[in-house]
Image (cartoon, rainbow, N blue to C red; front, side, top):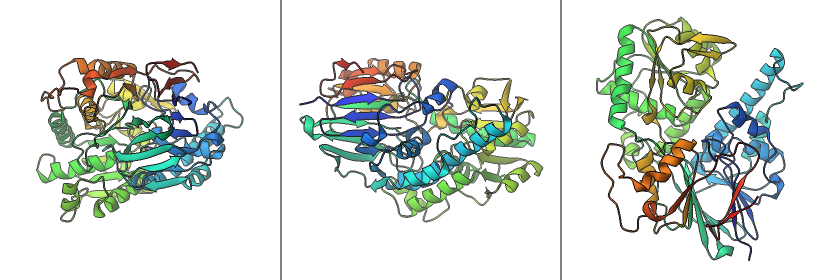
Length: 497
């Protein structure tokens, strides 16, 4: 009998580009199809030939609707993948917003390169088109949490809530042809107390775990973060300035609005106008509102109950900015205000225009409320850059920059290890992915240290805890087209590719 093989096609030694392949004797299953983001060498990998023939994939699963996990799907479908793409209902709803937008941006970037003549390709072409994205949506097969489904011969999938964004899931694949070997993919894990969603579900029984490590070297301080968030808004309002919040359109915008409403209601921040300037974020907000009203299975019961009494996202001062002219008109407004706009790492979108206008004024503040990948404008601002290049010019940074990484809906080191502890027994091996090397290495050594929760409390050590006894490997960086393969049937042995 052939030993199942796990191949890391991305998200190794870097946070983005989630792509994992599981080969068994009778099937080939892809878990996630994400875009690489950040530094140019990483972004260029999106143009590399995919590791296997897309037409040979029997089934695919996507963990959630962020582009670094689902954004390569249109290219695969265009290039011949006809396999069903399994996911949750929440992810399917958000993908219908995210993927066409990603295709549209690809076309815009190619058109801009052709008009300005800076591409070495003539003509410059998009990675895929908006039409490709709409075609790929037809491959989605939404399914429920907690139900085992055979998605390919001998491969049985179970999706469980991951608590990261609406619809996000961990994926367990039971390989029936391999004496019931089970491999679990964390996707992106959420916080133990996401303000809107249920916490990540326990792992259950798993022989191999592939776990994210984005914040493997950090412990979030939630109380301090909300205090800093409120203080930054109050300081800026007192100066008569504008607070600009680059926020991911999916989930981060909802979390920001949720906290702003509560802080205003508590009198912790001044009640000033709030403008949400992102059509995609507004579409995602509508999906969240519907999911809360149902409520969806991964919505916190407390949140669903509260939503019957009040609007969780709008205390009466939120204005939805949908068209370009409305967005431009924000520059003509005077007085303190808050602008929430995408993208979250300031790599593109309307927020770039706001940054060019607001960064040179010391009265303004930019609040960074999520992970900022290496090579992005957001990371440059977080690292204290004195100027950043955008829209063809260098812009001086005089505005106050406040990095609130703990605002992230990624689990921190303590929460990642606590989730690992939910396995029924110690996995034979844990592979760390979705992290920069220092984050993965810190998490790898984490089980040998005293562990604490995000608010500083020491985590209890349990007898037989997987995090203390499982072998943990940080998957090496993949800076070329090379991939790394491991045998799932005999996890102590690396296979040549």
